[in-house]
Length: 375
Image 1 (cartoon, rainbow, N blue to C red):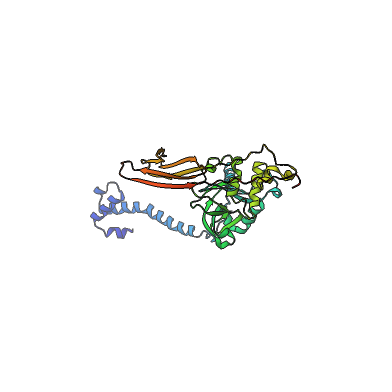
Image 2: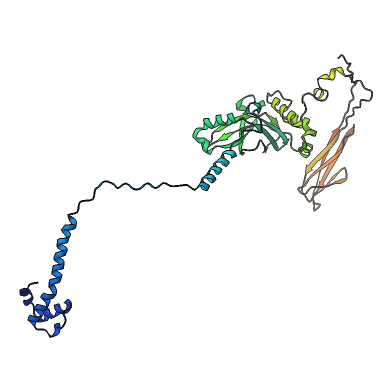
């Protein structure tokens, strides 16, 4: 501010300005003294402001920054070796879990690519398979991108009319399996019935890519295969019955694969009972031996179910019930007609029911046939 401008202010205003400006002794100064004091304090500020104003253009006169993007330094991510090995192990485990190829120590040209199904009892099937690695690679190529999500499955089909056409087969369900195994147990709900199994892959698209197709098997009537169920672990003692129930004596071409499987496991030939027991040299033997014995007898099994707390009797004799109310009675079947009453009484005695079974056995012994050595 100029001296003239400051003199235009009143003494009171100048004193207030001096007070705000930090002038010492302002309250005892006269007007002209306040003017001088205010001028002396305003000079350094003015010079500072002027220096700032002159410094601004100096900063603005610096060259403009280029609009081109400044390249950033490349930072390469380094993966820990242990983490990478862990990832590789997971990938390898996933591949093994869906690889159903059968090596088993055999060269690929010695594998008999097949899937064979056998009947365990009315509600369980047992499947065994051998698959070449080339077949798995063929399906992998056919599935293309779907192979990443592919999983191995057993497809259960119900067969009617002998399975002569594809229209006679109905898909029941798909059972997921995993690599590293060559057999699987499959549960079926409906018996008696005929079934077939296929082994293949299903990806995210839901389409089934088959590898091998099995033989047709027929499950028995429920309650008629208790002996087979009890002795399933010892196939060698019941192979004839299991082989027949699994379609071994059918005209299906796949029955040859079933025969080969049994011969491999039992380590002996199979075929008709005469050839299996005596071999091709049976014709040179004389079978008319006086010590040759042959007897046949029969037994009868009566089974049923009732309330677990009921009382059951057969021909007046009490029958022991299982915890679920089922019972089984094994009895002789003589060569005659029998009438067998089975009686069940409620626990409170308020009701009684009777079922009568009539059975007749008629056994006939035929004349023996003797074969000479030249027959």
